[in-house]
Length: 90
Image (cartoon, rainbow, N blue to C red; front, side, top):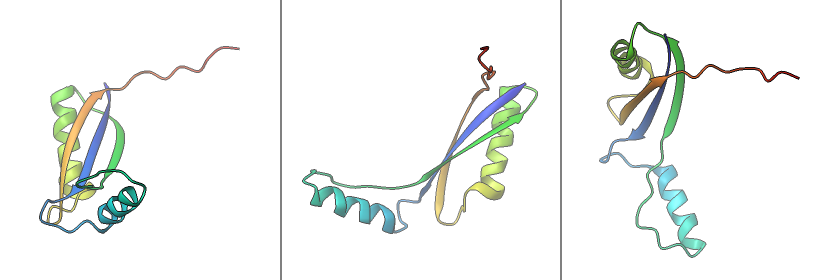
């Protein structure tokens, strides 16, 4: 089966987030009453696995091994079955 894993990576709470600080300052300068901004990234990976449990385990390994730096980042994984993409007929 094919699965899509969305790996959401963010700086740990105790790690400074310069990009988030810049976005916070910009939003405030535009008049928005914003208390905090934390930035991150979403990595979307499509792959094959036997079932959803195996897909989740694979995505967790990807996060541990490469997609996140565990020293300064936290991450979470969301896994769902891949939807078949169909090319529209003309």
